[in-house]
Length: 286
Image 1 (spheres, rainbow, N blue to C red):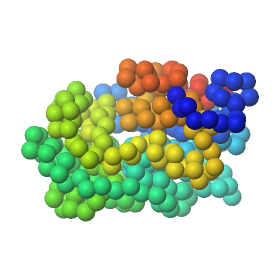
Image 2: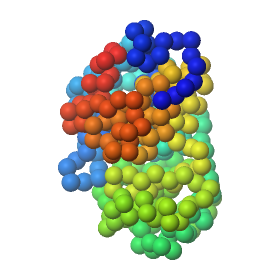
Image 3: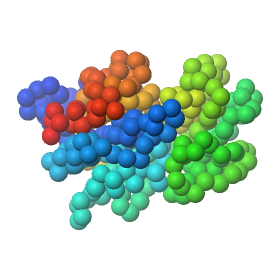
Image 4: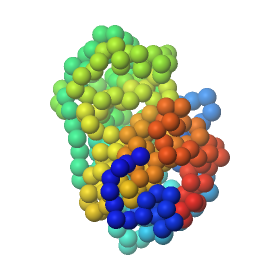
């Protein structure tokens, strides 16, 4: 839990109420489609209503996801935020590498890195992996198509890997439908991947990002703009890419479907996404 000093009440104290609500999307707001690595695009009424209550109460709702920017705005539309005439939402995309306001989409902060060496090392070990980089605001470029639904509904284009990483990028996705998450965890440790950070998802999915960039760093940028502190933040997530965010926030809550290592760093664990765990946690405060 964050040790940042604050003049406001602390999580667990009677007067504390989050001023920022940072929400992961897939596996937190949206349920996974059984037997696949893709999320349902349907938002339960309980979750939608709970997020709206937080928003209507004055909390800064910040969607915070590994998704690309263009695939997150539709979730805000599903929730029905922001209200007409209200300030634009803050959105933390690409695991913290991209911060934007919406609507309309206005990227206000972006971190990039040189991914060439890391990608070359991975391809030397696993030459058949799928590789994708975000084509910001449009979709993705990839060497071969990913399983249906995994990259969202943007305009996706086939391109040579060398071309995709020729210039600095904000994020690289490595995917192997025939491997396991454990395979990718071992691969990351074996290669070292110096100069970048990596996160392994539920499936054999590896996200490469600039060192020090995470959802926590993206949210820290947002809080600086709002003149708020980590102690003011309630964060809810379910994935390995949520660990830094949950540790950084004043109150970090893991979903009941989160891996053990994610639950272990959280201040609390709520119910499974199938049981609307995010709504249950939000209802404690709003």
